[in-house]
Structures are given as structure tokens and as C-alpha cells.
Amino acid sequence: MRRVTTATVFTVLLASFSTLLLPARSHVNNFAASSHVSAQAKVNRITFSPTKPFSQRPANQLTIDLQQESTGYALVLNDRFSFWASSLVFSPDGRALAGGGRYEVKGQTATETGARLWNLTYNRQENLEVKIDPRIFNGYTGIVRSVAFSPNGRTLATGDYDTTIKLWNLQLSDTQPRVLTGHKKEIYTVVFSPNGQMLASAGKDQQIFLWNPATGESRGHLVETEDINSIAISPNNQLLASGSKDKTIKLWDLTTGKLLRTLTGHTGEVNAVAFSPDGRTLASGSDDQTVKLWTVKTGELLHTLVKHSNKVNTIAFSPNGRTLASGSEDTTINLWDVFDGELRYTRGKHDAAVYSIAFNPVEPYFASGGNDGKVRLWTY
Image (cartoon, rainbow, N blue to C red; front, side, top):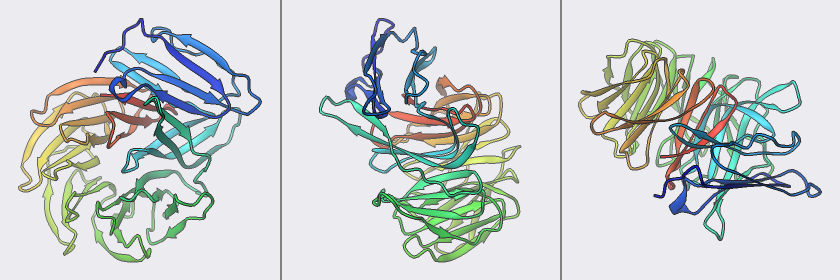
């Protein structure tokens, strides 16, 4: 992959709808972007090098900025609103990015909660175009803490602080969601099983609900003794992992509903859990500032990854399972080698805590979001 140098020139086109361009797939470290606001907007062409980030832009226009960090390149998806992303997820085909959280329209004082969608497509020049979906998935009375795509990409599930789960049909341009009720307190996490036959949700009421996403009916629930911050379902659809306020990770058999084992070793709340793509390794991130890698079959601790200087809020495996990304309250994103537990590099930095990381399942970049109101795309 060709590296971007400071001599590289980037072009930003400002016109009538928000579009981001990444050059050809073999050159994803080069970035170009275009944004549009209205059919009457004047087209401006601006060139700049990565050592001089473009910052002067009309306040009424949708924009996408390029930033150069000392540790890598990032595209910042700053459009007409600031978006504090509690959760990010790519669609199974890699053509859409969904985010849940709260957002603030620039120039307005009100802060709203909901989910947003960015559509990702390649044009004839093999450039990646990112367009803001005009739909706003709102109607929430609390913060959207978690979002999940169904395996077929047709449904977006959201978990909300208002105790409800909403299922949005993405095939319809204007639709009301199906609402699932049952939780008594805030929902922190929702996830589909890889085969799409189950939806799991969990949160502050210390229960993991298992749903039939086709009918919306509850298939039962698993009970813990503390708040559940994160859940993940194994690639073979047989196991569910939960990370909790009690500093433990629990592995559940989804066929029987029985607790198989409890993994101990963290000294702080477990905020994030994730299965590797082959299902053999489980990762966990904690308030104790560490990431741990476990063998799923035996529960053996493989590695403890130490680098962050504050809580680890989010973790994600790359599609090939070789890299694990972790995002922290310390504002950084670390990328680790899964096999030896060594830090590969620190990829960039947010301006505030990082809450969510998601890898594109097809292309070599990932998204991150957090408390600075920005969603970034990074190469790796």
C-alpha cells in the first residue's frame, strides 16, 4: 500500500449533498472529499496538503474534514451535526455505517438522541463515496446506547436508555420501528446472532433478553447479579459472552441457557467483550485500563494488554482476526497483534473519550466515535 506523503494534495468539492471520497481501494491512504448543501449552492474547489488541514468552510455547508495525526490519517465525518457516538457498526456488506448516540444540529441549542446512517459505495473511479442517509432514526426519550445490523443488512436494531429496543426496516424509506419491551431499566447493548435467528439485549436491569427478531417475541432471559455492559455472540451461534459491573466475563450456552464458566482477572468493570472471527478467542476491555485475551474453549488467559492510561470502553477484532483495536477514556485507539499480544501502533487520537470502534468487514479501514462529537474513519 502506497504511503501518503506531505506532498500529497487533497481536493475538497463543496456543492449540494454530503459525499466523501476515498481514492481507489489500493490507495486508501489518499483521501478526497466532497460535500453539498443545496442545488443552488456554489461549487468551491479547494486544494490543500495534509500538513495544512482544511478548516475554513461556510458554516451552512455540510463538510468533511481531513486530519493528519502523527500516528496516521483519519477522515472526520463532520456534517451539519455533531454526533456523540455511543455505538458504531458496519453493515455486513460494508456499504453502510450506523451510529447510535446523541447529536446536536449546528446553530441550534437542542440536543437530540437517535441513530444515523452513512451509505458507502464505490464509484466508477474506484473512489469510496460516503453519503449521509437522509433518514433520521429518532423518537427516543433516552440516549441510543447500542446499534446492530441484522446479518442480512435489512434491519437496524437500537438499544435505548428508555428501556426499549427498536427494529428499523432499512428497505423502507419511511417506516415506524417495531418496538420490543421487557427491560425495566436502561439498555446498554444489543447484538444479533450471526445466523440472524436471535437478538440479544442487556443492560442495567441485570438481565440478558433473548428475542426472536422475526416475530419480536421473547425467547427467555439470562439473569446476572450486576449491570451488564456488553454482550457478544460467538460465530457458531452457540455461546454468549457478557461483561459486567462485577468485573467478570460470563460464558453462556445459548442452547440450554446454562452458565458455562466465569472468567475472572479484571480489577474493574468489564465494559466490552468480543469474539474473534474464528470463535477461538474472546477479548475483554475494562475500567482497569487493560485488555485481556482468553481462550474460549478453556477460559485460559492468553495475554493482558497494557498501554492505555484510563478506562477501556470499546474493543473490536479486524475481519481476519489478526488485529484487535481498543478505544479508551484516555482518547487513544491502540491496535494489537492478537497472536503475541504486542502493541502494533497507536492509531490516532480523539479529542475526548473513545466509546466505539467498528471495522469495515470488506475494506481495510475502521470507524471510531466518542465524546468529542466526531466520527472518524482510519486506515490500518
